[in-house]
Amino acid sequence: MRILYFFVVFFLSLTFMPTPWASAGLFDDILKEAARGQVPANQNPGFPQNQSIIPTGPVPARHIIVSVPDTRSFGLGKQTDQWSCGAHVAARLARFYGRNVTYQQAMMDRLAIGIPTMEKLSRFDPSANMIFKSAAAAYGQDSLVKFFGSSAEEEKMLLSRQFGGVNLKEMATFDDLKTILAQNKPVAVMITNGIRQEPMLDKLLKKEVKLNYYHWVLVFGYDDSSRSIHYADSYADQHQVISYDDFQNRWNTRERGFFLNIGTGMFVSERTMVWVDG
Image (tube, rainbow, N blue to C red; front, side, top):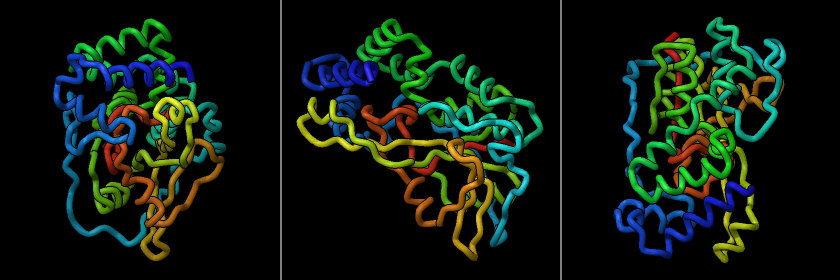
């Protein structure tokens, strides 16, 4: 909570004071949109798109990868906090491909990576660099990781510690997802996981602010006949099933603002997915 307050104060001060960041044009737009939790479309500074080529062609009407480990059978345990869903997904993927990686090991790897997404942002502009360094000095890198969670780039970096051939695609289509699943490859996706209100932000901005929780899950199947997606959730013992419509609504997020909640990472893109060519 103290970290959230720190960032809110800094971002509000930058919004209303003339700074190099505000005069940079792009970040002026970003800051104006921050209260709405959005960044102008197609403006994702310093984060090159890492889009993988997905084979085209027909996919079967149903494909369920039955060997994806659930939380209990492989001793992963449930997620124990609000930030490490990405680490839990990475450990589950590692187990699927025969690597003996625990949830705790994946958490330590995630902390070791740090927050390169924020570091890239800080290199883009001197004011962002000031915020990053001040926050890191005040709270330490581990606390910042636990505040921001795992962005798509950071999830890819985490998986790359165990595998070569880790792929990231943003703005993917539903058919892209089904195509990868049909190749017997589970896919990590970021979805919304409920809404939370933050009274402190309401008071500071003098308006009601609703924030999405974001959550990494591992999709391992689909079924056209029942129009359902099968996925593994780090908070649940057993595999979960969700309708196509509900899944796509939660996957097709458009929020990219600075006021995203714990676990979002920075600059969340619509329909993000990460998978391994194992």
